[in-house]
Image 1 (tube, one colour):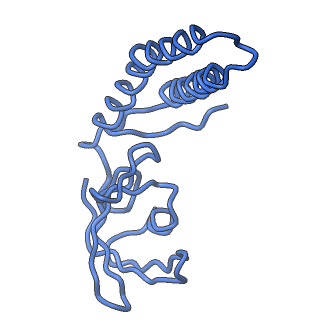
Image 2: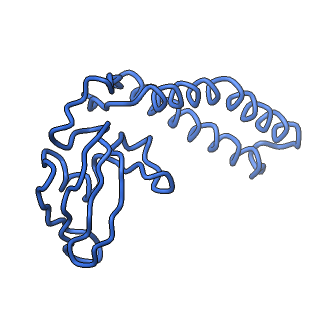
Length: 157
């Protein structure tokens, strides 16, 4: 059974666009590469053909995985999110207790995660440590650099 994943409307739309692109344009490009490699002669000694067929297999596996993700995707109505505690899709402002640095993250599905814009996966160590906490709570989180203590300053949606 595939795990249910929660998405914003933007994230769900991006997922649908990627599946559409891969099943249309992506498949056409792979098919063209296979045809060009096939035209180059003996298939038993054609490394380019083998590579194109392998790329096709990987491409189809990616499509299959994304379709399964899409089938188990659920849209969250952000207007109804409870901001009294940290949940999936919450925007959380936290402070590193040791050095006083503050940062703001939105907890999103793995496929939506993008650190450059402050979106972290709900499965990341930081998100896991914050889930269920309220404003004022402290969370000691194990990260690759060791344990860091964060204080939750603000929760919004």
